[in-house]
Length: 290
Ligand SMILES: Nc1ncnc2c1ncn2[C@@H]1O[C@H](COP(=O)(O)OP(=O)(O)OP(=O)(O)O)[C@@H](O)[C@H]1O
Image 1 (cartoon, rainbow, N blue to C red):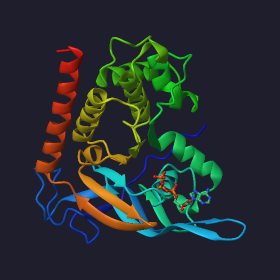
Image 2 (cartoon, protein in one colour):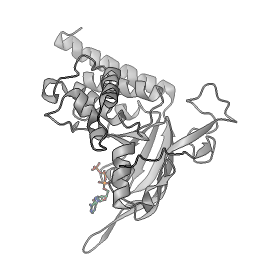
Image 3 (tube, rainbow, N blue to C red):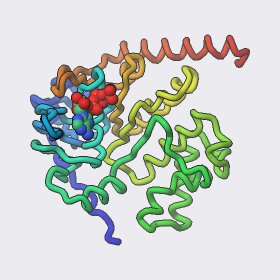
């Protein structure tokens, strides 16, 4: 099977009109605002998605545009029916738009065949689901290697990579455990490690803490913080304000339109972290756990 081309990325000045951060790049402390350039993990341009039913056409997305630079951490929010899942399906290359363009790196998925979409989906996108989606018969290390298995790439080098990722997410002492021997939070850590094994354009997380208690939610969000600080791009769909406020930016959809796109100030992120940490500590205290 041919190896995928390394995506060449388009560079853009970060103070382009599309940037929600204005003229200052919050992620590159050493870069001057005038010279800093950011590559795009994805560009969403005038995206329209229509579902044609027997008697009507539903316009689930009605021309949504925004960019996600590499290293960003975006929470997508919106009321039920606003188009979040529809957008997520397209970002995950599970569906294509009716019109408009969606770029992953330099690849325009709107122009791809089903086979090309499947290829890019398995090689370049890191999925994290609410329900973990692990294979029960496989160990932690084997689950992390699953995306490589589908590419016929299994060997000592790939196992070493999976072990390294397991250690990075704090599961170095659980390498040969199976999912039913792990807590929910540990299972989600496996899913996060699995999402990283292909060095994806971005982690696409759909309600990743939806099944977790407040203590574990705090741990998983701290892991996302750490991965983002290491440069990973994260796009996360959530209904919860306190989860969204941990991101660097909140994009809100309403009725298939982009309703708002705003950065989350560091002080607000810190406050969300603190509130979640305190709530987790209170739960631990009630449970008698130190
Ligand atoms: N396969 C489909 N066929 C027809 N209409 C659809 C289909 N999928 C979604 N829709 C419609 O598109 C609109 C957006 O749906 P979508 O699932 O993207 O919203 P959502 O924001 O993810 O909602 P929720 O938070 O409830 O999951 C809704 O009006 C929905 O009924």
